Image 1 (cartoon, rainbow, N blue to C red):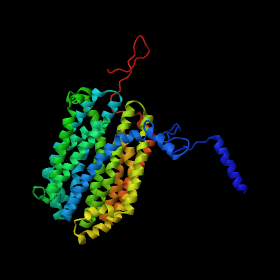
Image 2: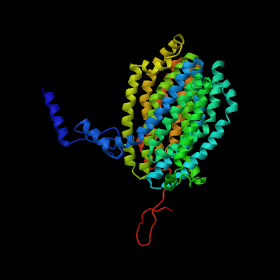
Image 3: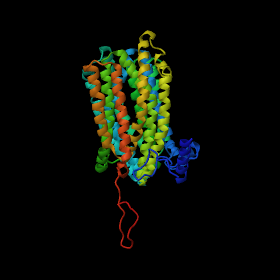
Image 4: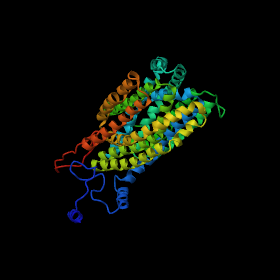
Length: 519
């Protein structure tokens, strides 16, 4: 009884002093900016406040929801493509992911650079400098032209590349075909990334959603027709899947182009008048965008190398790995929608010199993303068949039974690392919105080489480890990245970063200080 009485007395003194709960998300000055510092009267009141305040859930969702549907449509497109190829043959699905990821890895350097236009647009928009937005877009399009020519130059080298990888000959032949036809759509795909970043940067994400939904519908219809020879189209198998993807990329480019050249956009943002090459702006995009592109490239390269290593374990192991990654794409791509929204809001608020709201927006996005991903991770473990069944629907039951059993186990790995992937996507996106792209690049280089690629090679090829050893290293890779980006964000260096030119206030003779003017 004495101990109970002592505890009650301490609790009363605690309440009288009004001590606040120090939350995890705090700035260096000690002010809680992520959530209310004092315990709310109820969870409902806390959520209502977080919903309505500037930088809260509503602000993030306003931008993120169309982007979630947009990136979700892309994941559906990839899912359907892989599902059709699984129905077509085991060799086709085994070839699609390595060749497709290799193609996307090569393009990722240019996509990451061109799409970084979105950070320039967001900061120009926040700083009330709309006339600089059009020229920024065009510098991204010039990056796309360079990138497209480079990627198409790899078409004659497809056979030497995939011979060096060393998969089974039946798989290798289809890898070459798939890669070569995907390269044809590289230039419009990179240019579309730059133009879509314009709409996300100014907050018109609904346009991105409708364009991507239309592109997805076109791709799925063409996929079905060209893979199986339906709807009056010839049966082309994996070649038809690649042609359908390239046609959809051209549609994406022309859809954005038709919208972006409209008179209102040209008048407000100089989307046509700003077509000229600007050396200083182009090299500033290269300065900040290339590290973002390199980060994207190295991230994709690490997983590409991982897939190539896994391919040496046999077709069944490779097919199970491909299916697990494609199932993860369903959850991963909507998270990218949150990431893009967070990057845009950080850029806009930093353009307005409001790093406090940029930080609050990041935490709002993190809370929503983590709840979403935790739910998906639970489903991966509880009902894995829900995700695997579409791949098995028209496959040979005897062949697919081994793939099914392996995929069930791999989804448990996915469930664990996906929670840390939330940290990686949210906080790296916030750092990109500020311009802290070099740190992201260095982080990806170190973790990709020393946690994913080299350990996987040693563990699987040298020591003879199996499938699960490789997936352990893949999980550690995501965990290290998530924690590293979180720590970098908490240090707060990003708050003083900018990618746009800053015009200092002019000093007048009559007054000590005049408002900032464009020089």
